[in-house]
Every structure is written in C-alpha cells, then in structure tokens.
Amino acid sequence: MDTLSHHTVNVVSLAPCFGVVLIGIYVMHNRLFGLRSSENRLTQSLSFLGRHALVVYLLQQPVLFSLFYMIKLLR
Image (cartoon, rainbow, N blue to C red):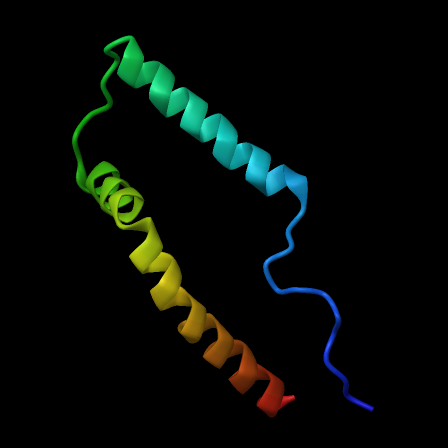
C-alpha cells in the first residue's frame, strides 16, 4: 500500500548545510578584508539569487513538488 511518509520534505543531513556555512564564511572573509572576485556572469547570477533568496525558495517549491508528483504518477 502506498502511504505518505511521516518525515518532512525539508529535512537534510548536516554535510550540505555545513558547506553553505563555509561558503558564507569565505565570502564574508573576502568582503571584510577587501578581496574581490572578478565580476562576471556567474557571480552576478549568484548575487542575484542571494539577494532574492526568499522569492527563489517560494517559486521553486511548487515547481519541485509538481515535478516529483509527475514522476510519481509515471512510476
């Protein structure tokens, strides 16, 4: 029988979250000590996503849930 899991979808292991923390520490260290990365398309895109993180999160949730639901229907 196909039942829903009692676990939440947003539970992740510590390793990926710790990587994000290390990236944040690296970026702030560079900002505090005046080290600059080159301005290119990738850095502009990442900075846009960082400035609009809540909007990105809220938009990706329905897309991901729809995608996973469609995958489940195909199985």
